[in-house]
Image (cartoon, rainbow, N blue to C red; front, side, top):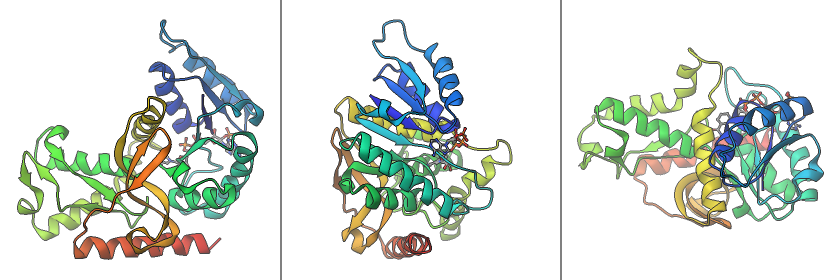
Length: 300
Ligand SMILES: NC(=O)c1ccc[n+]([C@@H]2O[C@H](COP(=O)([O-])OP(=O)(O)OC[C@H]3O[C@@H](n4cnc5c(N)ncnc54)[C@H](OP(=O)(O)O)[C@@H]3O)[C@@H](O)[C@H]2O)c1
């Protein structure tokens, strides 16, 4: 069973992918019960004829006790200037949800989606006391999709021609794409761009959400697909290598923080934090990003 706490845009999009791909039963849990029931009824019409799984909506945590995975996409309000805008109310929310999940499904793997992503991943892990490899903040893989999108547009190639693109750090203003190692159509990216283009691409990746909001109120499908990929890996006992936010205990020289780093995920959660080599610029950016998230954590 997959439970999704918060059945707004993002939660219901994730539920739709899980149901239409028939990977497991889904429970949508929402503060306003009617919304969960309504979304579940709508999504239930997307259950394939040969599926043995179903979906239901509720506001009752006792219904999520069988969950292998719990996704947290709840939000009390939405931000307009910065993801950290509603920091204290979101931290209160995640602590409350962490207590409930600890009580009702202490063995679940938890995927944190709500913002500010890294701060909430940290507070969920500390409040629940779940093993840090069972608490995964999903966002850097979305930022990576955006990096790949910009490179594909810039060089007019399909995204399949871009390899090793990855974005690390905070899901926020200090995230940074890793340029070293990226190839486009088999050629080294750094040999194809100038320093100022590196700065411009980094700016574009960090500000993708602002650009999107010129046309649509909030994003939902990119994060839904990236979250679905993690869910599918866990349920179908596969393995993926993506950047995701995890509480660090010395990896990359950081502790007392959760941050987007390269990880391997299998059916038990994170199996390994990969230590990839970073150049001087990238190491410095990682340090700054960790400092920023730690500051936010300590500001609550
Ligand atoms: N990780 C990423 O890359 C990424 C990408 C996009 C969005 N996000 C984040 O994902 C979160 C959800 O975004 P959204 O656009 O789906 O927001 P949304 O449409 O406003 O949905 C949020 C939902 O959470 C529910 N909720 C609030 N408090 C709750 C609680 N205590 N228990 C259960 N449900 C509760 C709300 O219920 P009511 O109907 O009762 O208000 C609402 O249905 C936000 O924090 C957003 O910033 C993250």
